[in-house]
Image: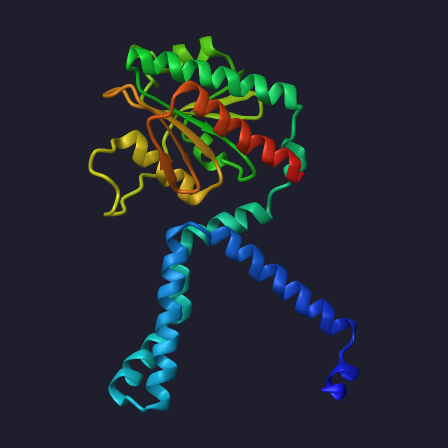
Length: 255
């Protein structure tokens, strides 16, 4: 033990620290997602593989060894959304997207007001608020705007007579950058059948990015919010304000 400690140098400490940070960040990314459950399943298979090798259970060991031969491809397929989100975050420069707290809070308040107004009138809406992950690919599919966030503009976009009312609005900072945008649809079989296309689009985008999506149902007038692939429904004005403020205040504190 003493010999090991004597051989332990600063490079070893740096190596352990970097690996620990990488593992920690990976765990934070998959925490609370479907990938976390899949990771637990992989750990169960690993334990079964070790047990089958030592008992030995020849047939089970043969099957599991065949599975591990393709584990890299399996991991890429299983963790595709998380890998995409991680790579996108690594390529971003968050400090370039920061704007003053007063502007941010004002924009959030406008979003809250329009969500409540649309909900009362049972007019559907899909409002995407960009965070660290750049949504350029989705913005390019919509109609470019570049307008300051305001209740009036958002109301006009989502009015039933508007040709782009079915698409999503993407907000970056205190600007509306695009409207009529198409989002990826979540197709997981465990999603409630009562959820419509807007809610599935909100889930689909937040599974792939760190965006926050506010949804207004035109059928029920309910307000929902999707973050990290999770959907919270039946939000009132106060709850929506609290959740949005908490999310974007936490972002500022971390920076």
